Length: 165
Image (cartoon, rainbow, N blue to C red; front, side, top):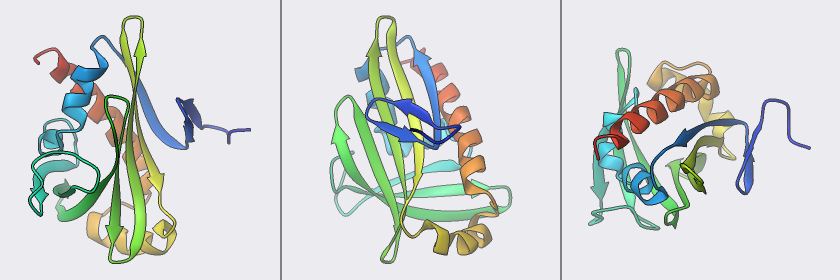
C-alpha cells in the first residue's frame, strides 16, 4: 500500500512528485526535459549548465554540471544520466564523492490528448547524512518540500514553453 501523500504513476510510486497533463506529444516533451542546458529556462533553482567529458546531449552515462541558485546561495552540482528510455523515462542522479544523494526523474506517458508528465525527486541512500551539509550549500532546510514547489513551477514553465516549440 502506498504511503499517504504518495502519487502512483507508471511503474513507481514517488513521495515527492508533480504531475501535469500536457497537450503535446511525448516526443516534444522529451526533447525539452532531456535538454539539460536549457533547464534554467524553466526551473526556479537551476540556471542551466554544461555537458561534461565530451558529452553533447543526454545519454546513459553522460555527465552534466548544473549551475544552481537559491536566494543569495549559488552552487554547482554534477549529475549523471542513469536512464534514457526515449520518450518515456529520463533519470539523472546526483552524487557527491561516493554518496548517492538523489535521483531526478521524468516519466512521460501518452494520453488521448497528449501526454502526462511526472517529475519526481527521490532521496538517495546517503541523503540523510548529506542533508545538513546541503542546507549550508543551498540554504534549503526541507529539501523535499522545496523541490516539490520548484518542480511544480518547472513543469508549469515547461508547459508554457511547449507552446512556442
